[in-house]
Image 1 (cartoon, helix red, strand yellow):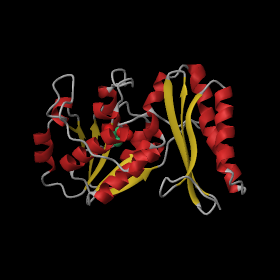
Image 2: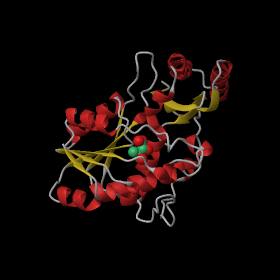
Image 3: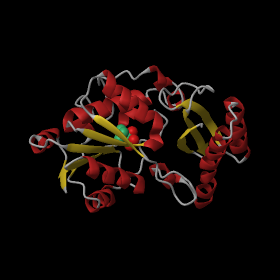
Length: 283
Ligand code: PAF
């Protein structure tokens, strides 16, 4: 596996590659990421991954500084999974106006209005940061296919919009969420949890599963279901950000006319913010 740190080297290396499948990541890789690499191998001849902890998508009080950086272990996992190239840019390489502290005049992409709802409501600027870095990475890698995890359902939605609205010739594929035996969705942030919190964390998925079952049985009182789940988690010590049933294709609040749905959630356990979702058909 080739490790590439600069834009020039990446461009030169990929110049003759016609069939690139790309998996952007922020590192601290787990089985969920490796499943995305496997998907990429099915869709492209050359698999490129990136590891870049993107400062633009972190709010001022978020975990940018403490975000786990595990470069050597990540590279080993990527290589074992059959990745051809890993792009490891510095902040300066990605953001030429970065002065060691501030991103200064960095141009950003304005994401669609949905970016102010759900995770975007409590993380202002997050999806602008994601859309901007993904656009930059797409411009550098120029993949035919890019793979993202469905655990970040709203992120996949924003990236599909980015591709649609900017006419990018890239197919976006969403890989299924990989879960622990307990149901807990794999996430780099699970590493922040104490063993007791990790056991408790499985409750988030259980609450979502309960909503899915209720809707499948014909209960379309979405607000009641959301409130009940939120109350259960709050009683168990969670700080719930949102639990919301939405139409899967638009992310608009679900109506009883919608069949393809997704229940999305974000909640804090101690200081760790976890997200999860389940997409499903009501009938
Ligand atoms: O999902 C992530 O890891 C990040 O948001 C992404 C897509 C790599 C952009 O920084």
